[in-house]
Structures are given as C-alpha cells and as structure tokens.
Image (cartoon, rainbow, N blue to C red):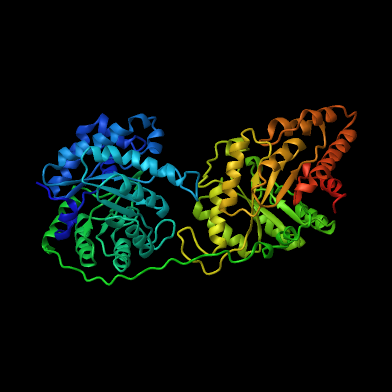
Length: 610
C-alpha cells in the first residue's frame, strides 16, 4: 500500500519515468498526431509504455496528457473529448502503476499566450488548467506535475488554481536554455523562489537541454528554496539525421549525472525527451548506490523583487513627444519604404518635409504585407541623412519575441525614439501569400514588451543595464465594425503602456466624433490619420480594398461628381483639409499619407497648419 507521496519523498530519493512523446514517435506514431488521444484510441500502447517504466524501476509514472488542454485539443477537433482523454490517461497509468508506484498527472503549457504577451486573461488560463486537472484528479493521480513551462506568469496561474480547487501535491517545472535561464530569460534562482512562494510542493526544471545545464541550474535553485527540487533533462540536444531527431546521450551518462544531481541536492530525478526505460533502469542503479540519501545542508537566500519604473519621462523621450506634451499640434507624413534597395528618394522627401515644418515621418512596416525595404533601416537612413525625426511602425508579423527584443534594443541604440506598435497585416494579403507569419504576440503584447524594456527589464523580469526610452504609440480604428471590441483592445493597449495613438484614415467625421466620445476615459493623445483622395479610383480602392478604411457615401458622391482627374484630385485634397479643420479641436495632431509617393499631396493638405 502506498503511503502519501508527501511522506514518501521525506525519506526517499524519487525516480520519475522518462519520455512518452519520443517513445511514441519511435514506435511509429506520426508527429502530427494527437498523442493524448491515444489514451482512447490505443490504450494498450500507452499501458505498455507505462509498464516498461515501472519494470525499469520508476517510483512515479506520468500520464499521457501533457497536451490535453482545451486549446491544444481544439487543433485536432477533440476539445469535446477533453474530460475522457484526461480521465482515461489517469486510469491507464493507475492500472500500470499497481500498488507501489505513484502516478503524476501531466499538464503542459497552453497553446495561447497569456497577458501581458497575448490575449489570454489570467481568469481564462486558470479555467483551462482547472478543466484539465479535474479529470486527472478524478482518475486517481497522486500529484499534478506542471512541466515544460517557459512563462513564469502562466505557471503561476496553474499553481494557484490547482491549489485552490484540489487537495493534491504540485510539482512545478520550468524549462531552460543552455544559459540556465528560462526561455523568457528568468534566472533559476528567481523562478525557483517564486514557484515556492506560490505554493508548489516541489519545484524544478525539465526538457529543452541535457544534464549539464540542469546541474548548473540546480545549484542556483538549491540556494533559494527549502523544498524538494526535481530535475528531468533531455537526453542531450537532438541531432537531425535523415529527418529524424536522434538524441546522443547514453543511459550510462545519465546514471553518472543522477549521482551528481543527488549530490547537488535534487530529491526528484527523471528523464524527458529522448530518454527510455533503459535510462530509467540505469538511473535506478545510481539511486540505489546512494540510498539512504545524504542530506544536503541548505542556507536559503532571500531574493528581493526590484521595483522598475520607466527610465525616461514621456515628455523627454523625443522632440515629437515634447511637442505633444506642450499641447502643440503635431504633424507627420507617412513615407512607404521602397520596393528596391535605393533610398535616396524617401530621404530627399523627408528633407523637404522637414524644411516645410513637418514634425516627423511615419515609416510603415510591410504595409498590406508587401515586400519592401525594412522599415527600421529606412527610418535610420532618413533620420541620419535628413535630420528628420521618425516614427517607426513595428509589426508583430515577421519576428518571434526574441527577435523583437533584439530589434527594439538595436533600434533604440541607433537613435529611434518614436515607435508605433501594430499587429501587422497577414501575409495572405500581400505579394507572398504562402509566406509564414509568426505573430508570437499581438500589438497589446508588443506594447507590454516595450514597457518592460522602457522600465529596465527583459521579458523574464531581469534588470537590463541600459533601458530604452521609446515614445510608444499604438494604432486604433474609429470606424471598426465591432467598435466595442476595438475599444476594449485600445484600453488594453493603454493599460500596457501606450502613450499616444494614431488612427486609421478618417473619412467620416461623425463616426470619428462618436469614437472620441466613447474614449473620453482614455487619457492619451490621439493623432488622426488622414488620407488625401486623389482620384475616383483611389477613393473606390480605399473604400473597398483597404482594411479599416471606409469612405462614406457623401464623400464618394463628391468624388463621382468631379469632371476631370485634376478636379478629382483637388476635391480629394480639399476633403482632407476639411477633415482636419473639423476635427482639429479634439486631436493632438495628424498623420497624412502620401498617395503614390507624391510629396505634393501631403504638403497641400497641411498648408493650413504648417
């Protein structure tokens, strides 16, 4: 008869099983299959793998439920089978474990990013974790193991909701890189102390790397926690051989590191990707050679959280920001990056606009997903060669979080101070519809990223030596079809740290005024987008083919009533000037677009305000 796991671990070194996913792959299960569904469709295969680990000497086996949460199952159309998949996973493992071996209910991270990096709220995340934990507990698991988490904030929600709803031990494990830090950059001594603080019974690391980086992380974690620590490495870093990932570490190598882990203070040891029952068998031999275990003396250090504040006040971040703070009407003109590698024309246009009194140049980032010169490079050339301040549009579409942080740090170091954070148009809109999009975060998450960098910390909450001081803006669409949703997203962007907003082109002043009335509670400057209509075709294009732009019928009738191309152009320019005159009292400035790259159009529109 098993004693409670919390009592067992007091007097025993605990050995977990090894990989489930890579073992299933080695047995011919396609990698694009839903491995969790095998609990229902091929229960005997799952039972045999569990039994192999039990026979090899594991004290604990994990359920085959790592990805059996709502979001991941939705990808396979299996969300309606969530309870059955998790309950069956627990039941199969419980049967294979018998009377002497414990069962851990495996829960992995979600397929959605949690705020502040994504749209998933804390409440929604907790509900998803609770939804998966219940059938595991109902199925008879002895503990819950949260594993392979990169986001400390996400695993916090899992710990809190499980503690609140279930009386069961929790093992909480982050995954790390070769530097020992979490994949968001949080050092092990920081995430270890947080996991203990939130109520995990055992804390540790698993997956992504082999034994050596985990031993280094273990030594740091051991200095800050006084609860058991678990270590479950991969069998080294895989090597791709003819399309298959081959793990090069051996069972003997793991046996040697098992001794090192125990000597360094680990209480729970297991294997992750690439490990097999043979690894478990050799690790069991190492544990037997050490039992009864030697107690490692700990002197726990207290880690203190640092308070971070923005490094530079908003009004001091740029000339553009200063002018807005002084309640002066700001003007900017949008210059679209060229399709080729020659930038002399946009640089010269920026020089002319500067001499004309325009405050800044807006550089869109791959507008409409068309292939053009990188916005950041053109921004630097314009700023360096013309002396004109720029507002760099930065989209989430093409880069992962790591790449975004690198780009942002580099852009700020090179002198870019104003930035407009946008989600970005999907590739299917553009010239390469089969190109892939990243979208690690959306504009809300990206605004949070910039706020972190501005306050002197990286994504893991660690201090960075030289904080950024971006004047961070966001986009907003006054004419959105679902205005309630648009305003909610705008509120989230402002909460994330947005300091100003630039709207989609304004054509309908009544719609714009209604929008401004709806956002009176949002106290940041609004810069109105203005697009000069320079032909009937241009008006039709804006009205029918540009997302977020809608030209009202009265304006379309004015354009259709024109008698020549010249008449249409002058009418369109006058409409733009009328728009600015009518809404000027409620906005901080305007951004004027440059149709067809003709600098005369924005200058004609702005001649009354320059």
